[in-house]
Image (cartoon, rainbow, N blue to C red):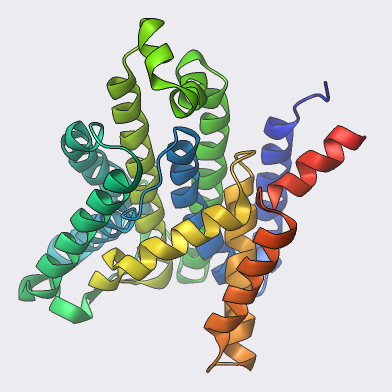
Length: 312
């Protein structure tokens, strides 16, 4: 069998991005920031998909993560990146721990629609809450990292470095988790839940754990996007946002923890350039891209690399 070099690739990619950051154009850094943040969200969706579940409501935790980071600055004037991201993870994890007890009982379309319902409930609440900016949301900014004040010209790079370290750190942890006993149960649950129960494992507990992990990653991604863009608004929990995450997950495939970041980077690149040169038909360009991938690479973009490894 070919040797697994995922950890080495993650380390090399993170090192290259961190070294290239100071000389990278601002537009490229911004696009990579968004791609890494969205890839982190889709990384959690990949875990659910390996368990046989598809969530149409990851926007719930993505938005919670953004608002957790934003409210610290909006109400308490806290602009420390580490504290804001920690709040994003904590809020998303706590909410998922509660909702996950209910979500773990459902499968297939019922799981997908219930997750979407919770996301749209949050959207409705935020739109009607004037203290949180209603439909406009609110802005935020950062000025320190773990208590260390950041010079103005280094703030952008500090956010980028945090996105790189967070994204690839989560990818490495997910890679280790998928190789563990609990991680391997995900595929077994997708194939046959009854046999997993006969083996003595609790399907509901594994699904609950995977659901919380996916929510934490979505919350982290939401916090990173809010810090990158400098804004949080209710649209982050709208169904179209969750749909984009599903789009990226299908585009990328679930064969490797690197796939979500590849899919997110291609998605953001295609969307940005399509919107730049064809603002009235950019959705059509994305649709054609998805159609081509599904026709020629039904297993997602990563299946192309897996195919090359098998033929090597």
